[in-house]
Length: 277
Image (cartoon, rainbow, N blue to C red):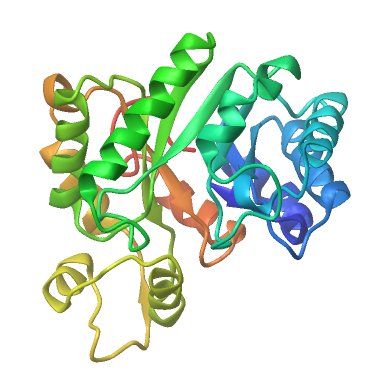
């Protein structure tokens, strides 16, 4: 699941509903400073969960900024695993133009990082027209992690088409990448919020796919939940073709609503045990 500093109190309230050891991503937002991010990681750890701080390469203004963040996280007990992404800015604010440059710096392992999650894009990336470029970049980052002795994982961009996701994972495995995959799932939220986030992140959603998911593009009122998506994902999952696959919930409706929904769907949200993150 995803988490922001403003949700610390909510996390403490709903923590009994979340399985111990669940992985919670710490956002890297311009609206939050280093202290807020570290406090979020500390709160996650204290509640018995695993903090996965996101490092947005193009938002890093300097090497010192990266080192200071990792040092503070380690002191707070919230370091071991991170997720490294390129980030939203079209131009880098400092020396890191992409996730690969952060990995290649060697700074992560210097500060005790042992596992790095990468972003995957089953529906493509609107900023990269050539799908082959995306595949080569992902494979290169996985290889770079292996060479540095770091465990790798992939968290996919959320989407609404389970067939597309399963085909992408099968292709990933066929290309020789065997690291664990966590499928991005839109958490329960209003249809308007879900569609707004899809637009923000460049996630395409057609009318037929929306109907299959459980909402209508023509009528954005009401709520959307991933019940059908997860059921279809589980039905199409083949261990031999897809390997280790779990879920990652994007908390568009807030962490409280997502935790309550997962608690009600405890038997339905698993793709492969032991659960989601």
